[in-house]
Image (cartoon, rainbow, N blue to C red; front, top):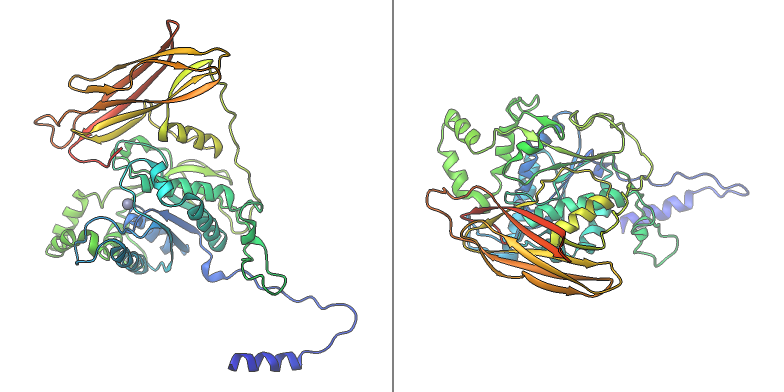
Length: 459
Ligand SMILES: [Zn+2]
């Protein structure tokens, strides 16, 4: 009421102009939400993969915003009775507390649901890919980050959670789309008339760099593919090592790690340091450069060449589709998606060859395949498989007739043995080979390197 009275008063005082219209400055974007770094993570606690670096960046005066894919409503609750959506409501607060401890308060959730598998396509489906992407593009335009940090989209031996990969996929898509004014144009349109309350008045925004952090067990393979930061350096503002600040922040995640955190609280400072280092808190922070639109060197600082101010929209450099052979057998599922994804986003991301994954011993492996026939006549394809000793083929090999100009999906299924004694929770990776043959000629060799573990997310 009071505000309305002031407005009426201002209007009464406004001078009346005749002729030329006086230029009136338009409202600008809200600076409180401007970020230098946007971290795109999947679950509450995933921010821990980057908090030592974020603490360092905050020390250097950088502004950080965070988007989580899900609220983390699945999994066990170590701190109380709450489960499912109620647990998600708690974990949202835990994530906010963890980040607030570092000084980060601009935190959003995309509304996806936890998906327990290693298949990024399952996670994208369960997150409602389109809606999640629309929200992430909105957040990029709102926070106008210079740099995006996120999980490495790809399949690796490790936890390699599909949700983590989905965060990396969405972040890459948003990186390439937020600067394009033809994408979600309703976010960019400004209301001009009454009853246009749906238009958002954001501006397109082109981020300058994207870096990934891997979800693979062995991150040595990413050495030299991006900058690396020691977590043992001492924060100028907090006078503590960055790993220590990251651990303090992690203490907010009681529902996920209460027993672990309680065990730490009983230790002396020296014991704590020893334990934390052996638990991985002392590992260097390693990033993989996805792309830079401002040049620079692969292993240099994240902010090398990043200068304040806008750069124009840069359409991704799509590499041409390789010409398909007349008849072929190729890996399908997430692997063929990632081939397309890297091509569509102009990414030259290194990925393991042959492709690899970790699976739970005693479960099964499904190898999804595309059988392609570009010929003008039907062709017969024969599939055979070479398996390690003790692995049992259950279905999917034999003869297939693929009609002219058709693509057929096939799947080879293999029962995996129990873990060998003395394997200590995991077994050296083994190679599986599927061969395709047509008219006595090889039309494709598909290899997968598989590590058996005591526990792993479903394929
Ligand atoms: Zn996670």
